[in-house]
Length: 169
Ligand SMILES: [Zn+2]
Image (cartoon, rainbow, N blue to C red; front, side, top):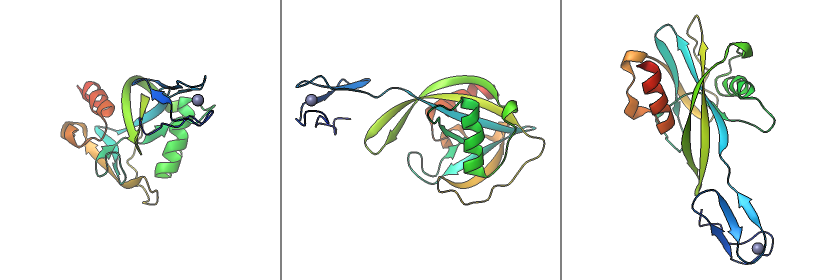
């Protein structure tokens, strides 16, 4: 966060990161907030198995992830679920069937900026397991894992570890 030194308004190297939520310029009145970003994670469930993707990029490259992503501006979280599952997995879902379960805060470091997110967890139950076409750059594989066989150390994000532990128990 300290990489950002130059104020985009007055041009001086007087930007100060407050260690929490915003940069302020000590030379002019410029302020930039790094507000918490909303994101969704979808637990796709078929009987006693859950669907995970394997990440092929950092953060968490090679680790397990739930399908989902950041909410776009002016989008409901259910619309984000629908869009992300379509983009990531090429599946068309019934938007009325995403069931909100709860949330966890998370950190998402990306290119020297750490984003605070609020991960909203949704359940989507399916009658039959599906296979995904491997075309999307964020995903290298999709796997179904029985809830009793989930290795929490292989899950990429702390928010998902924490939430899935409480969801499954
Ligand atoms: Zn300034």
